[in-house]
Amino acid sequence: MLLITLRGVPTVAAGEVKASVYTGNGRVVWLLQSTYESMRYAFRAGTKSLKSAAGFSLFDTCYDLSGFTTVKVPTLVFHFDRGAHLSVPANNYLIPVDSSGVLCFVFAGTTGGLSIIGNIQQQGFRVAFDMQSNRVGFAAGSCS
Image (cartoon, rainbow, N blue to C red):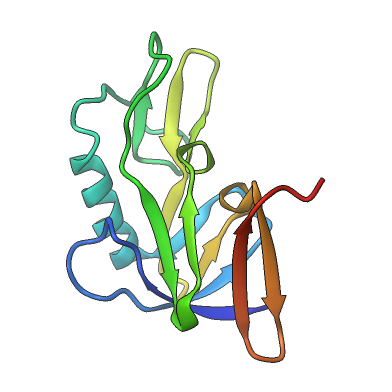
């Protein structure tokens, strides 16, 4: 397990977000509850023009995008200590949960003290782990 420090996510209100982060193999991004709530608030503010849908499972921010071929959503970039950045494409954090056009923001809050970046958010990137120096790096590109 590699623990790194998340310095901030620009969609979060002013102020620095600090959290230990594990890059995991789950589908969901788990953020400390207060960080998640700030991020969700900012994300919802940037998607006011989209039609909301009922929550699904543990996801509380969902949209009915049936009939749309494209939509604009806020940019999401994670900034880590030591300079690494992960700019996450919308397809990696707003995913379909049914066949009728409902998509959900695949982030959730946790009180467990550890944030986790899921594998869907890492898709389309090469992830380099430096276990000795406790660092992680990201580069666009698939593993094929």
